[in-house]
Image 1: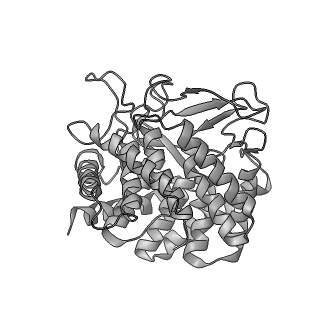
Image 2: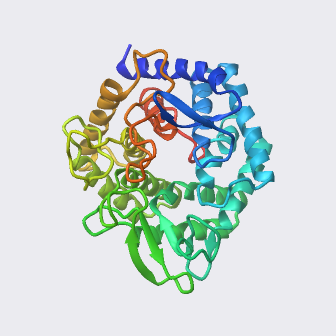
Length: 376
């Protein structure tokens, strides 16, 4: 049995146990080896739904299907009541829940729910500034003109909605936002800002910044990871070669700065001491992003061997050094993820998004099962 197969089977078994352990609640981040459980109100809850759908695709076990469908019903309720949806992470929520159900089961109600979610995301579009506002209400004094690199992973919801409706407003907003992200979030040395501020009245560029990185001018590793994957997904939907080039640039920057054990620290510019925190979730996201990137590269592409090597090194270290393989009572799949080191929030714990992208990467490597960012 391959190492990937062992890791998959271990994660699937943990998920089976977690269904009973979590009940109707959703895991977020952990403390002392126990996941904090929330109702369907946080930006992270879609990742648990995604893990359940991946588990069902792999096993065809109705236990996972029923649990996943139950989460989709919760997402229906959340949208009907517009509960905690005043942010841009609608793609993270609904791509991995209702859109996953549509992809797997061709369920029309799930498709309709996902389209309604895309409409909620479009409410974040700011015509005057020409961007999708990340956080806060329109006109917010601090966040009214702010975008963040994470949003690249929410754009596939809009691309997908265009494909299913023909409404060009979805695609146009996604493309304009991706172009703006490429121009202002990606620096000339191929590093990235976490966030960028614009004048909300006219879209004039103001400055780069961070919310969770070491400092405004540093490169937060999870932000770089979102860029690797996000631009590769924008390329899939648009065939714009500039997006593929940008994904490659960000990936090379990431891989060229891997530490000795091939799993990144929380920020590429943070001082490295024995106490510096890692972010295994950033490496898991990048591994999934590399798989998407590699799917678009010809066999003779000069960068292909470099990215394949980086992927293998990353996944080998995640499984061998950071996973809970061999710890049957563990709730999470990956140790040593960080939510916000700068903010002191879960700086060295399980992250549910880290678990999701780790399983997504394993299943794509071993079984060709991809995530739920686009139709199959």
